[in-house]
Length: 191
Ligand SMILES: [Zn+2]
Image (cartoon, rainbow, N blue to C red; front, top):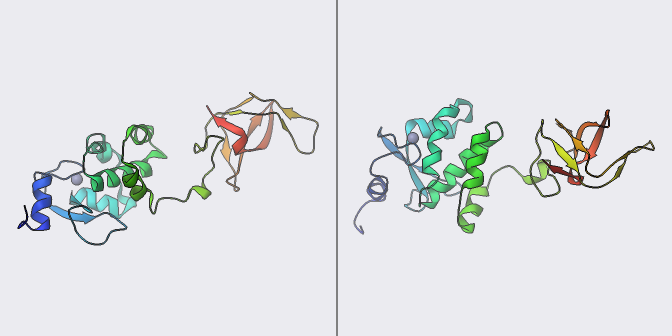
């Protein structure tokens, strides 16, 4: 292997098939950020379809990425990182992608690489367990919460269905006991 060029080594690794979708169309090495050099450890061989959709999220064809169902199990860290990032992007609107993210296994070091440059957690609305809350989720209130400006108490165990997010990521809004109100996200648990 020592005399093989990087690209030849990569082509041998992937048997000349796109490492994400297995297409046999022409492949080019794609460097997985934040790395900038094409090396065997940091590059993935991609077809133009995968490369184009990764570089321009506007052009994403969700069904194309069903291919990650297979390629997420690759033994190659750069392939895992790329698959994980793509699944994370799709996961907000596609339950199947979130399911795959949840199933995925990566070494700690690889996961750290994958997380670099992804959305900052500070901007997300998280429940008591650090699980991201999204519009339409149902949550359970985990402690008695007095409602500001009233004698009302939202009892522990109250279920709030179909929440909405608020401008402040620490808050969610929803209806409890027939009243619309804001709740502190970390006093809720996603159902
Ligand atoms: Zn591809």
